[in-house]
Every structure is written in structure tokens, then in C-alpha cells.
Length: 396
Image 1 (tube, helix red, strand yellow):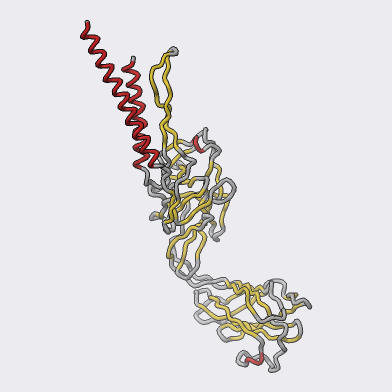
Image 2 (cartoon, one colour; image 1 turned 30 degrees about the vertical axis):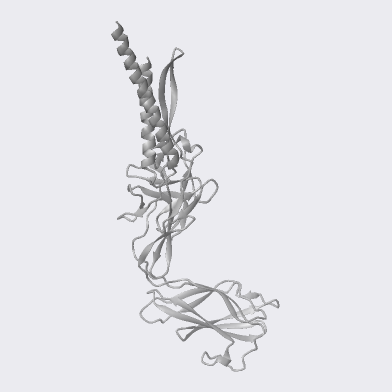
């Protein structure tokens, strides 16, 4: 009987040493979660029969240290949650290992080729927060976009006098009060200058004269109330620019002066935000702390490609381990709850960083020594049992 009991002890300790060895081997594995062997006594008819391994449990909820890498597609989760990845079989797995890259089809993938899941964008680049799918980035260059809107907010100095020189002439400084230039683009991505010359006509009454590349392109009246607040125009007005060289399409720019004031202080522009840009080549990817994935272009623009989502569970310990860094959901874990990083029960995303293994090396080495002693003790039982059996047979 003692032989069989000691044998169960050896088998159990061997499994524990396997788990401890695996933990130590993965001390440098990104997103690895350590495991622990659970033992239980074996009884038959109230008689002790030894020990058995009840199973191995992983410390899924214990996070590892986060280390900055400055690599754009290295992602870490600070707090609760898992990345969602999907392989060729269509099975969704959950992981904390955030080492990602792009494949030859421009999908964001991990080292196993599984595709990172997230909210996708439509053809216009608008985020579709209800649609989760494979995150894919656009490979092509960014075509030029003509300027079609200009948000312009300024203060026109109420203390300015009406110019004494008339009529308005952009070549004559005395015929206008202030001026400001904005860069705009045509349909081929060529840059032009839109210059506004502000002329005070009377108290609370101004005119903005538009010139594109030095050629008159129209004007817009601006009126203010006694408190210096803009009363007209109250909606964006259209500036039409035709006859640009190179066979480009005419420009139609919606100019919005909302917020412009007339106070007794110097002329100052607080917002000058035109749309449009020249063409650009793809230069890289970035992910921000909200999980927004952007493609960067050589013209300084960036376009949203999607948003990384996180998954969480009511019982993370109920997940089924596929490896030390990946799990699948079970009836015990419950269905995945999906959401954006930093919201509610989802942790924050740390871009340019990785979560390390949560293995406590010191504790594992102590467990290793303890297992060694237990193994030696059970071996001693077997040796003693053998000696007693030999003595018994020698006495017959």
C-alpha cells in the first residue's frame, strides 16, 4: 500500500515540477500567465490512497509589468480585458500578448497570423462602433483632396478707423485694416493662397475681400451687434473659385465665420482650419490610447482605419487555456463582453508598450526546491518499502 501511495506522490510532484518548469521557461514571454498545480487527497472506503492532481489553474487576472518599446504596433492593456484575435478557422481567441504587425494583405496580425479584431470604418472613414471584424489598413497612397471648407474665427479690432483711402486695393495698405492668408488645395493637390483683406466700412460693419493667388475671388459682408458678436452671416457662405490653371475643377469653399468677434483689442486669428491636402504616400501606422488605428502619410495627414476593441468576462478564470498566452470562452467564463479601451470594465490601452509575464521567479524557484524535497521524500518511501519487502522475504 505504501508503495502505491508513494507512487501517486511521485506522479503528482512530477506534474507540479512540469508546471513550475514551464513558468520559469516563460518568465520572458509577453503576456504569459503563470499556472499552479492543485492537489487533492485520494480516499477509498475512508482509507487514504495517496494524492492526485486536481488540475492546473492560471493566474489570468494577475497582470504583468508594462514595458515601453516605442514600437507602434506593440500594445499593452493596463487593467482588465483581453485582445480579440481570430485565426483561419474562425475561432476567436483572447490574449494579453500585444505584439502585432501587418501581413501581406495589410491585416493587423499577431505572430501566429491571427487577425486582431476591432471596430471598422466605412468608405468615408467613419467609425462603425457596432461592427467588429478583422482590422485592415489601406495600402494605397492617399489621393489629393480639394479644399471644400474653411473654419475661420478671428477678432476684428473695434477701435480701428474706417480706411481713408478708397476704393479698396490690396496693393495699398491704407485701403484695408488687416489681412490673413490661408493655404488651400485644388483637385490635383496643388497649393494656392487664399488671402482675406478685412475692411471696416462703419461701426459694426466690415467686409472680407477674398483673393486667390492674387486674383479677386469675391467678398463677404460681416456685421456685429453692439456687444461685438457676429450677427451676419450666421451660416457658412460659399466662396467659388474658377479658372485655376492646370485644368483643375473649380473650388467651392464653405467659409464659416461662426465665433468671430469685434472687440476693442488687436486683430487676432484663433482658428484657421481649411480642409484639403496634397497627395501623400503611406509612411506608417500609429495606435493611440483609445485604440484608434491610423495610417500616416507623407503629406502630414492621417486617416482612421478602425479601433481596437477589448473583451472581458464575468468569470475570466473560467476561460479555457489554449496556451500560456491565449484562451477561448466557455460556459463557465460566460460570453465575451466587447467594448472600447478605457470604458467601464475595460482597461486602458498603452500603445508602444508590452505586458510582460506575471511569473514571480523567486516564488517559482522556492516551489522548485520544495518539489525537489517532496520528490526525494517520496523516493525515500519507495526505497524504504523495497528494503522492508526484501527483509520480509529474507526472514521467511
